[in-house]
Image 1 (cartoon, one colour):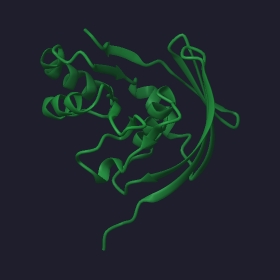
Image 2 (image 1 turned 120 degrees about the vertical axis):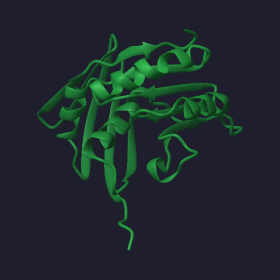
Image 3 (image 1 turned 120 degrees about the horizontal axis):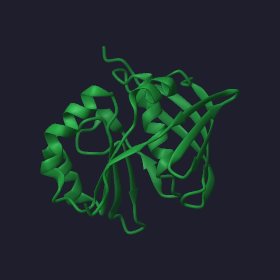
Length: 182
């Protein structure tokens, strides 16, 4: 019998000084049986970094043709496609064809660096693609914050991210490997 997803309830307060976005989101996040706490927390962090009233978590790992997070316009067009991990060049090409803006958040340290070295030259033609690496030691620390019921405070200023739960704080410094238009 297949394992069921584990449900996480997240109250996510985002204070993004860079984008002047201040809002609290109540999220119900399904953690796929094969998903690690690190990936779950990276997904929540990616949501916070792109927070918007129309941003939504998708079915994620259980669906191949959907990103982890997306934002659709009121008329249903895909405005933002957010993917985590190390997608193939084919998946990134298809994503860039489906959405106005695509952001990939690789993580995993050396594995992510090897992936990027292999794939970066084939991504130069995608003007709507950003690739933003999340350092391995920082995402591992984020994983330690995971619990079934979380009240997360995420502060973003000058590209630096502070994630706090109760009295625990993790700092994350996303590194832009590819900016849209470059």
